[in-house]
Structures are given as structure tokens and as C-alpha cells.
Length: 542
Image (spheres, rainbow, N blue to C red):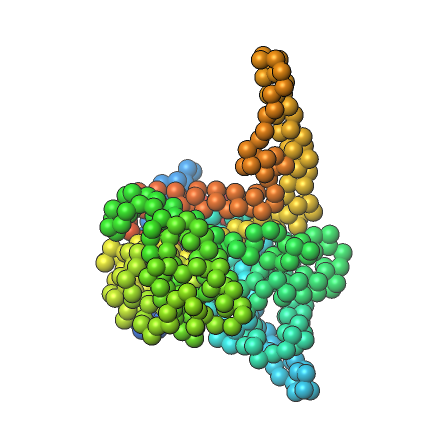
């Protein structure tokens, strides 16, 4: 730390080039520590029984950094010597590892019964290489600072993988929302919003939260309204301070199902690839594949729906209060209706309740879409699924990840697999800044153009063959005549983003001979993009 502080203070006086030429001893002493300084310690903790979430992220960072460093050194085209390039790249990677800013705050809440309690909350901003920072707000009594920092880091890498121009952020309030009334939750949300805004942790160009565990459209409406009527009262773009809002508050069609749709697209890209399916011993294609789903919340529900439509069979569903199983397949829509009515998946007539550990049951694809660290070194060897698609953040621990790779299991990593949510949040943010919904300016024009096209074809046919020849559009063409709706545009943009990112991950994996280790490939891709951006921007304020 003393070397780092010494180096930073020296940089304030000299340009980067002067530091590396006039004071190499200072630079080398600092950079020699670099991102490698904690490799063994991080590995030891990450492979333990219950590693901290931030250590897990740092472990994956350390695995990917050597590959990213090599690629970056080859891409820097300057007159710097090789030694200076190494110092530069190592310094960038070292600086990228910790969170740039972490806010810890507390405030009082007067409950409905008059009792006054203290509420604790956090917001972490991992990287400002792109702004605003982006990341959800979760309400959970399990929230703590380490978790918030880890999730902020994952958001940075997630955005980079999918070419979303945001830095990573995350927020959490340490409460169980089930234990508070709606009025109390509104008080908490609005006060938290004011505290974030006052301290520079909220704003359309600064930091843009979104829904997460325990929050949804309602909480995002409260946040947007609070910001608009306080700090952002003169900000024309105030509604862009959060995403995941209701449509009437500037939200976007397709946001609710975006994460689940992204899980489907990311899985399908690799399941359709003959090379990867040959590695794990499966036939290409989703149709007919058996799947077990862990978590039937928003992400799990929509993931199940899209897999079901693609011809896959959801044979098991795991929830916090029980599991159900049907080898012939479970209808996601029927299960959704049952859960809405009964409040549980247990007793669903389309499947049987079971006490079996379905995580370890026979299936082709396992879809963990709920909790962190559910696949550990104690059960990883028993996982029979050939493909594990991480709909949740961090469902596989590093020790389990090593076992799965050794057993030739294909893990589609969270920083790619569940990035559909932040991708569509980006679309919503752009919509708010543009102050117009997608397609509104072109609907009528496209409809008239297609109508004139049909009329032109009809006139040409009638002129050639004489007589009345009606030209009737197919139902598909007629439905598309009016142009793409906002939902169509969102779905198209998400599909394109996931496919493009998937191809890039494949390329990195192939270039570095990583085999089924897609997580390292995704981290390499993210670190390379972020570091390249930082290097190109320079170190203006160091």
C-alpha cells in the first residue's frame, strides 16, 4: 500500500511517460506488486468451503488476467519499450481489481407502530471507465458490503462482455421486505434514493440503479419520482436515473422477461454449436433436451417459458419450499398460474412433489436461476447435467467450477448468461434520453410503404394478365406490415447482442485453448475490452 501511495503521489507531478523514464524504481516497485500480489491468498480462500463472494470474483479475475495481459501487450501500438508496456498493462489490471467507490449509510425509519429502527444500505461503484455506473438495488436481510462490491464487479464485466457502455454498480438495503408494510418500504426506498443522490451515487449520467432481488417496478417508480422531485427537479432526463420502471413511467416493453430471454439465447448459442456439444457428449439443438430449473421467480419463470417454446422439456423445478418432478415435462404457464393462486409450486397437478435433490438428478441442462453458491465442491462431482447455464449470479463456487471443468461440463457463465437484463436496461436508458419510444416515428411510414408495395405488385399482375387479381398478404406479412413494435425491436436487439457476444467468447476460448472453460474466456474478453478502453483514454487525473 505504501508503494502504491508513493506511486500515485508521484504521478500527480509527472506525466505517465516521465514516471516510467525518470523514476523507474518507483514504478517497478509498485507495478511488481500488481494484480498478481494476492494470487495465492485469493486462490486459497476462493477454494475454501464458503468463500466470500468478492474473493470468488477476484479468483476468476486472476485466472483470466494472464490471457488478457498477453493480448493487451500485443495490441498496444506506441513507441513505448516492452518494459513500459508491461508496467502500463499491469497497472491498469491492478487498478481495475478493487471497487472505485463504496458508500455505506444508515438512516432512521419510523415504523407504522411508532417504533424507530435503523436501516443500513450500501452502494458500490466498481469502475468509472464508462459512465454511468449500472447495477441493481436488492432488498435482503443477507445484504452486506462484500456482496455488494462483488456484484458491482460482476456488473462491470457483464456490461463489457455485451458491449453495454456502463461501469458496474450495485446497491443493497439490509431488510427482509416481507417484514415491512408497503408504506414502510416506500419510506425506505425514497430515503435511500435521496441519500444516494446527495452523495453522487444516483443520476442519469452518474449511476443508474435497476431492480434486483426483493425489488421491482414499484420500487423503481418510487426512486425515479423521488429523484425527479428533489435533486433532479431541473433535470430534463431525470427519469433515466433508474431503469426497470413501469411503461407509464418511461419503462420499456420486454424488460421484465429480458434476463430469462437472455439465458435462453446464451444457452441456445452453445447448444446449437456442434463442436461444443461434441465436447460434452450431446446432440446439437435445444429441442428434446431435458432441463431442471432451480428458482421459479422472474428469471426462472421466463427462462422456462423460452426453453419450453424451443422444444426443451422442463422435467424438474426446485424452489425454496419444495421441488416438483415430471419426466414427461412441466408446462411453465400452468405452473405460473398455480403458483400465483397457491403461493407455492408444491401440489402442482402437472408434476409430483419430490424430496430428491434435483440439482444432482439426470438431465441435459441445469438452470440455476436463484441463489449464489448452490453448486459447491461437495456436490459438483454429482452434477449429471452436461450444460449448466447460470441464470443467477455466482451459483457455482470456484472449487466446484474446477471440478465441473475437469468432468467436461459446459458452464455458461453468469457474466454472459444473465446479461439480458442489463442489455435491455441500456435500451430503456436510451429511450429515456431520447424521449421517444422505439418505432413511434416509423410505424405509419412502414405500414404505408408495405401497403403500396402490395398494390404495386397487384397492378403489375393485372396489367400483365388482364382482369382482377387480388394480392392477399400472408398472416405473418400482414402482422409485420405496420413495422416493428418496441417489443420487437427490444427482442431483436437482445438476440443480436447475445449472439455477437457468444461468438466473441467462442473466439477467445479457441484462441487460448480453453476448451469448455467459458468463464475464463468471458472474463478475458471483458478485461481486454475494459483495459483497452482505459489505456486509450489515458490517465488524465493520476
